[in-house]
Image (cartoon, rainbow, N blue to C red; front, side):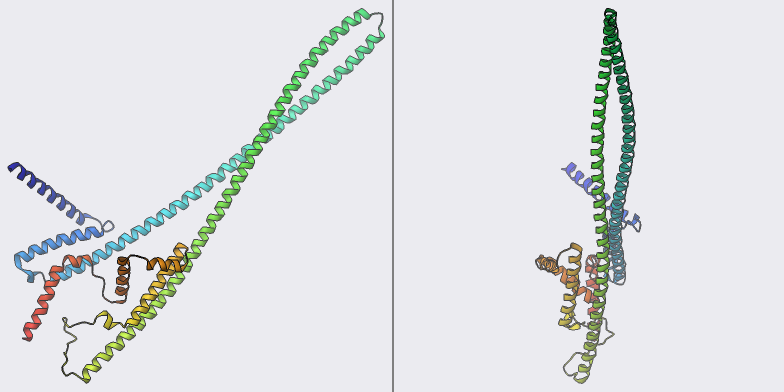
Length: 390
């Protein structure tokens, strides 16, 4: 039993040490490495310290300090979110630059290979032409020798015909000459056959090289076509980006115009309400404008419903147009996809749209962490004027 309890205590101590190391690491991070989770860890540490102060000295000792801490942590949270967004954009731009650099290197290497292959093919063609010229000259020389031997043979035959007396001796000489001629002719015939075979092999090699050249030319044409397609796509993307920026500027102007109309409507509503109170104040509550605990107007009272609907519809149209241009789809399909989205996504969109029209910032998670202190401070402050009025 004692060993089990000791093991549990050791595990708790190790967990506490790991948590302390993790939370202390949040304070050691630089400005660029700070994340939202680190801000939340810092908020937890500060919250625990505030709870210790409350346990020692009471809630009144931290009522002034807590809103300032919450404001600072909210600023840290927004800074961390902006830092994360900038980092993601930088990574995307670096990836796009690397892909373009790789494509340029590929096209450059392909061009260099094509140029080297063309140069080698030209050198081989020149060598083959020289070899063919040498073989042609050799064949002409052999043909001249054959003609010379044929003429000599004819002369010898004429001499043999003229010398009938010396027939035996002439026949013997003729046989010897014929044998020599036969040997020479056979040798020349073999050489001619070998040369013909060499010429045939050279012609086959030339045809193969021509086929390789045609294949390389076809590959070069395909690569040029792909390069033209890629350049056209890049130009189209740049044009689409320019169109989208122009549309965004127009939509921004429209939103500014609608916000001006909203401000005018709010001003008209604000000027109309005090006139009514000045006319008839019987049975009504008089409110001091400098009182921080006075009741505020709701979103529906501050902004008329038709103006809110107009702003929401304009923002939705802007989103559908941007989405359609980014995906290359018609606007009807994009709008139908948004209507078929889950309910929680629609609620999130409506909340973001209403928050954009409202002047108050969105409540962060840090305010939720310090909710028990802010609520207690607000309750305490709301009770104090009531007691004074009593």
